[in-house]
Image 1 (cartoon, rainbow, N blue to C red):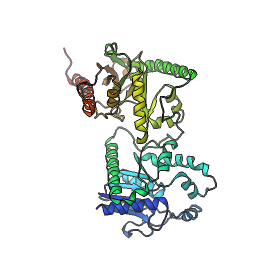
Image 2: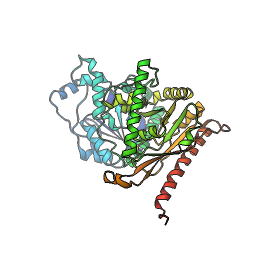
Image 3: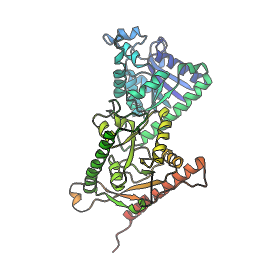
Image 4: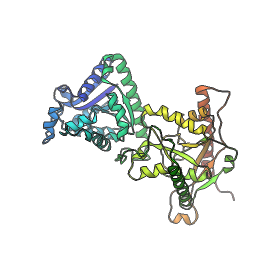
Length: 454
């Protein structure tokens, strides 16, 4: 594997970022990988860049052992040629340029948050104001770290703190003390890099949306992500119910008039009592409204990415209609899993998008993640598949709408096979649900291609 580490100062620095980069190169080189380092001062001359002078900040950076580097596109492209992954250690100009070039070259990229928030405060010369650390972390997330699906943390304190500062990507912990065992550290890094490569290749393959546009999820979360189902007092329970009722009422008007929404198979809901997992394909920004309207009078608890609870204004509306966040950090996922199973056993109906990403107006069904089916099997509740199929816009609606309109097809509930156990039960439940939904989409495609009957 060819790994490119990009860092302003490498060998001549004792900063936390430089120490982490030095450790990474040492253990990966010993494991037989090629590690290229783009930095200024003291590193391999083939990938060296010039120092950058910034009034005031250059002086403060030197006090902290960091010399800022001048971005050099020619050097970066030379280092990236034939690379498997790019690892950016700091959030400054050199790394920002490197990220942009890596995206254009469709190279997988990961970032490290190697220093804590207070280190960045001191680097800016405001060491007397430690309370600025949370604001600095949120700022760095909004201008740099949001561009990455995976971020590496090199201390437990940073790993635990970042979820509170609007970091909704996958966080991975590899402490500097772990490098005392080079073989184990190299194996862990190889596994992390494999995850980054897999995730970023999936992102590059997703041409349906801009994946690296500016992220506005910078506000504090409007909900406690460690316990999203936390019981509320009577006033807030009434408030949330009122908000859900009026939101669905408005959604019914908007989806039926604007999107021509129809619901088929509602009779399949009649025999379902108690909790259930509902799943659907994810083909529109507001397809949650399609599902809520189609499943009336059932009240559905929707799940969403954690970043939506950090968006200005939207974060409160999302909370008030009862949506719950899926934790971005893997260390919270186990608790979310257990809490959701408890809610299902209490009779709630919780909605998931097992494709795990939005492809607008897609008429295919992408592979399912198994999490929702694992919860259904553990809670002993059925899975209710809802397939959103598209049909051509007809009638007067064509005056103001050119894109397809939607039909929500509610399929019979799918139950876990009691004769199976463990992973086999979950995989079987997932596959039967997938095949049932796929059959609906294929039937719809055949109907569109067949000539009209005379």
